[in-house]
Image 1 (cartoon, rainbow, N blue to C red):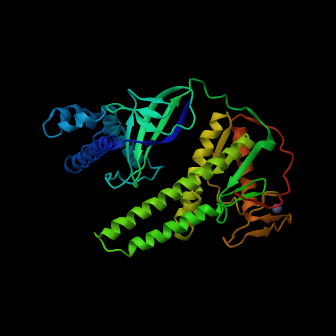
Image 2: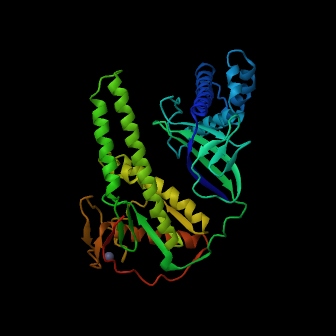
Length: 391
Ligand SMILES: [Zn+2]
């Protein structure tokens, strides 16, 4: 089983300068590979493969006078850059992912390099090839074999290392017989990040909203500056900092929330593709983007896997809000502004979002059973007192 840990690192000035050159080499390989591939296709209708054709060019380039400086970088990092380019093309060609054509990496953006040979981690330091130990803030020791280190530098100049460990222990066997009471359906709402089938609503915490407002202010300030001015450069840095703060705050919050959901349940059921559909609606996009549903499901997924639990993703079930969970009656139309309704046939009172979460749960249980798992009776539906959970 693999386990990841991200830590802050503090390179010296010389080390930071070296890393800057190395990030530059990695970026150069990516951008040059992309340029060659695009050109070949346009001119000769020929599709090159980054993992083979571009990677093969690396030793040639290193021997040349013009690109000899590529030798200074960790060769694994350059090879990985070709693999990353290949993956960007795979995403582009995969109709399910709807990814755009690969884009050039900018030296202004986030930088990264991947290292998997000659990597070490110790008490307060990490080691990558061609550099002495770099000072690091190692929170807790992960038992296992260090497989790789990915170094990154944020737009604001902070350095991080993502460590990947092989903990030489098989992932726990997936739970085969599930207790119905430990199955939870999650829906994404407009006013809440999650609404679950137990009737619990979790709002985005206030600090997240504040971080977003702060970002908005900084972006407005940036738009008022003149292009190319020193003030514009300063304002851009402030925007990048606000972005980072927002991302960090969201990340922390989602980690805590997903930990709690996975610890309390054996199966978590979510609707996945719905977000993409909703994104088409510009007005909703902001809310959904803020809720960053996808990032949460990713965290739920790996946390569940670590414990042999299940994350079930069900296809967008467009009627999840409009179907009565009690009698399955389906309402034809329901405006987004309607927050609660009464079923015309069985007269159950519904909170729009909780009803949807219950339908998602039922749909997920059907899917689980189809996959051969046993789900014990879930003791009916808990009458849900609304309890907006404080973050
Ligand atoms: Zn009904």
